[in-house]
Amino acid sequence: MTTRAPLHDFSRNVYSQHGEDGIVEEVLRRLASASALDNWCVEFGAWDGMHLSNTYNLISAKGYKAVLIEADKKKFQTLCRNVPQEDVHKICRLVGFEGEAALDRILASTPIPKDFDFLSIDIDGCDYFIFESVKQYRPKLVCIEYNPTIPNEVEFVQPKDFGTKQGASAKSLALLAARKGYSLIAVTLTNLLFLRLDLLEPVVGPQRNSLESLRDDSEFRVFLFTGYDGTILSNKASLPMPWHGMQPGLNAFQQLPRALRRLSSDYNFLQKILFALLSRSNVRKPSKNSFAQSPKKSSSVLAATSLCAPPARALRHANPRFGPKLPVARRPRRRARWHLRGLSLEGARTPIRRDSSTSPRASGAAPPGFGPAECRHPRRSGGTGPADSARAESSPSREDG
Image (cartoon, rainbow, N blue to C red; front, side, top):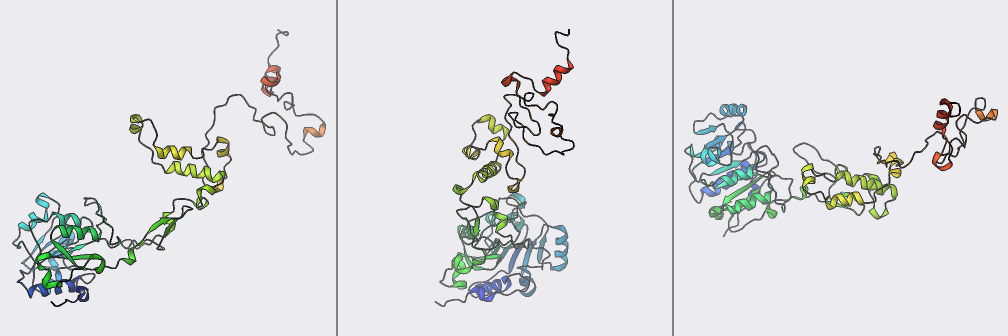
């Protein structure tokens, strides 16, 4: 048996984006040498019929008949102008998963055969579910878009929702294709090409290629891991976001501020307080209904709130350089306290700088209402505080009455 040349060697763009035109043309050429082709192809979304199209080269250069489906009305009008051929069936509608919008139902309204030559699926999102929904038609060759930022070993499929634009991983699409009776034969930067199992021999010979042997994903193999100090680390300097032209660095993924990136057992008292508050703010609070059903807090909430719960006084004097002003949890007062400038809580005087010319000390007299005896707590000394002294002077005594 003769070993066939790798299909990737035939990559060539006429209207396609990443060499699909050359690969598709070579696959169909090899198939034509072993069996007759029907010269039909299908593409959706077809855009304007030409821009980055995987089928227009077959239509214009090989005389293929086609079914082109595009949901956008403005693009569809351009499609009709670009591809005016009568044997190209142009349909403006959104392809769905079931019912009248299913691809099987849409194709049933056209004269296309059940085992047509080529199907191209490119709708930036639900490609996986559209391919899964095709059951009555068995195209020979299928080209379907995948998300190239997902490594080969990852299985990922976005939600079954046209409003979500995330795509599917190459592995998930390969597993789906295998269940439908297809085998992976070629990979481009954004597309996978699958061939029906009964047609493999004339195209690829006895060899069977795996996803890993056909695709080098080293550019997108990004691993995230954490250090002992809580720093988020990676084998790459940035995360590729090719559809937005961005490459965010690791600072965008850090969960701890720089002051807390150290081993938790090495935290000082202030760092323990800040970490407890940060942990508490990151815990998702249950709704009122869930509290009503189960008054007990979850273990994660208890862990966050019990980790070095700081006293209110420590919170009040936390260093503002390490974060925003912290809320103060005030305790209810058990007894009255005098809060006077220059005095401690016990009533002892503390030195206050005053101008010598205006200071009462210069004249030898104490400030009115600020004497040590007047500032004693009434419950401790039996005396009167400043407020009691003022009240006594303003109200007549019983003897005067």
